[in-house]
Image (cartoon, rainbow, N blue to C red):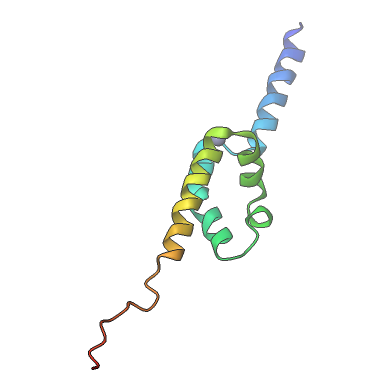
Length: 89
Ligand SMILES: [Zn+2]
């Protein structure tokens, strides 16, 4: 392989990677992604790159699933009306 084409090849690899998020980027975006989802918005539309990464990376997908589960639990456990003991009767 000629050095020039080798360089072009490397550049191409990095060019593709540049467009994709790293796991670290995704880790940072997962809370926002989950917030969006829990709020009833479409996170795939707002964070297409994150969605794409989650599709391909089981490590990040596991984290996402855990955060989503925790967020949904929190939603459900919001203090509805704290059943105050009735003083009547
Ligand atoms: Zn990842």
